[in-house]
Image (cartoon, rainbow, N blue to C red):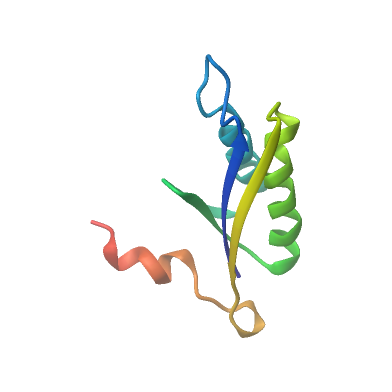
Length: 97
C-alpha cells in the first residue's frame, strides 16, 4: 500500500524554525522504519494497511503535539490486491537520474 500525506499545520513552525511542525510530522515517518520519500508538497510512505493507517494518524497529530495551533491534512491512499504493489520505486524509479 502507498499513502501520501500533506500536513498543513497552523502556523507551519516557529519564528526560529519556519517548518518546525512539518518537520515534527516527518520525524514520525522517519521513526516508523518504513520506506518513504519526502516531496515538496507531501510525503509518500510504503507499507501495509496495518502499518500505514495508524501512522497517518500519528503524523497528523504530531504537528499539534509539537505546538501547532491546528492542522489540516490531505491524504491519498493506493492499494493493490493483497498489498502487492505498486511500490514507490515502481512508480518513480524510471524518472530518477
